[in-house]
Length: 137
Image 1: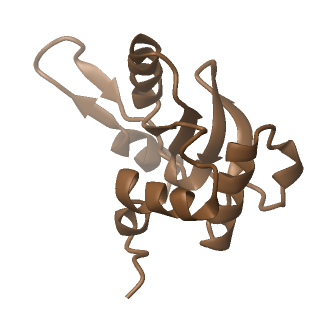
Image 2 (image 1 turned 180 degrees about the horizontal axis):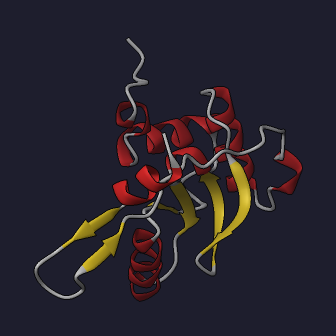
């Protein structure tokens, strides 16, 4: 396909201002898979990291998106696990990350004190296995 055709596929003409809109190219975000367990700072982060890693997800600890520090992130799925803060701060965080098309889940560190409660959190609060067709039969 020629370069000219590629460019014109991304341009949309409208009757109202702005008259010309250029669609952005959405590319899959890729991440290098490596064990970053040592970067987890709290015990809740370590338990959540272990649990996600055992479910064959590749979590990334301590990542920054839109000037917001995310405790644990699943980058290809754009899922962010952030330690719970005040309601006002949570609304701001969700608003900022929704602009970047991220889904945010807040967790209480006391709730994730063991792997069983962590498993409960992932299955009930986040519905993680059902989001992408990865539910166990």
